[in-house]
Amino acid sequence: MSKRHAATIAARAGIAQDTAFGAVTPPLYLTSTYELKAFKQPGQYDYSRSNNPTRDLLAEALAELEGGVKAIVTSTGMSACLLALQLLTPDDTLVIPHDCYGGSYRLFTNLAQRKQAFKLVIVNFQQPDWADKVAAAKPKMIWLETPSNPLLQITDVRAVCQLAKQLQALVVVDNTFLSPVLQQPLALGADIVVHSTTKYINGHSDIVGGVLVCNRVQLGDELKWWANCLGITGAPFDSYMTLRGLRTLEPRLRLQQDNTAKVVEFLARQPLVAKVYYPGLPAHPGHTIAKAQQSGFGAMCSFDLAADAALLPVFFNALGLFTLAQSLGGIESLICHPGSMTHASMDAQAQQTAGIGPTLIRLSVGIENSDDLLADLQYAFNAVANAIGRADNAGAAGSVVKQPHEQQQQFRLNPALSAFW
Image (tube, rainbow, N blue to C red; front, side):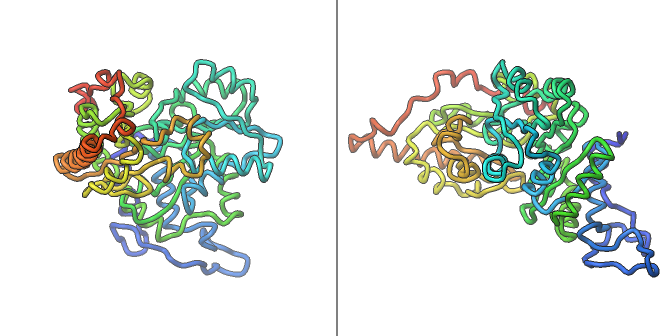
């Protein structure tokens, strides 16, 4: 376990380690192959699919940030998920949350149904009987995602890990939404942490990548063998860009969280917002657990638009700063409609079970000036209000407007929230 602070680990990642020429920032090794010292005498590196100096620097930094012993950098976040699943056999059971990321859900369900790669059990970890259902499944692996995507529900990682040890099951935690700066699942008892490094770790929306961080060397060695075997290790250039982005992770997240607190407070006052989803709100069901296991509430939030889904194009088209796009975690603010975008791979019943409604909107808050972001959102809400007004005048608003959530007042932001962390 590193004694250095996260900001220092991230900022110094790969710095002043060049043994060839003393370069302060590390060189990019694009070579695909390496010269042997002599016949049957390979050096530390032989082929970049297996090992690469640039990728290794990134892996070492991420392992230290997460408090792990070994990290395997992969080509995408989904390939990191696929890599973890290599630990399962057709006789093993995988338990997943009912509200996981749509791409992960698609991978899990199709591998289980079409390939019979493992048995699959879906559990709602927000229900009081979650432990009984997990125990009954007798899993080899338990997959967690907290905060969840897109409803930001919180799962008690420590409680799940305690149960998993009794069941002799592995716990894998998708930590993409928070990054190792705001949450360290291995310290809570998890065995493996998964990231889409495309998101906060890189932070600039210009590469795709993933990583697995393990708490045991043997586990890491097995997964590294599979990564090389499957050919899903990360590219050197993508690793170089991710390492560059990693160095500003802590200050980026600090500003993004400050902006998010202001956005959440703004949304809570909007008559056209039915409900806000953000674990930093005291009324959020997972607020207490989030405070206990996280170092911050993150920079993701979601809300239900209190209007008919037919008015979503009006809202999105009126925005000038929030970009309608997939992904999250970059320095730019993004907005998406989970039902038709990030979770489109889930069928209607699965979306309903996960609580993803037709007017749910997800925000990834960036580092722009917060006043500009709030003005952009206000302009979009005004556009919807004007559209409703025109429909009222035409006598057709009865089927368009929804009443704001009756408990809206409980979602008022604690004034001290932005200064809490």
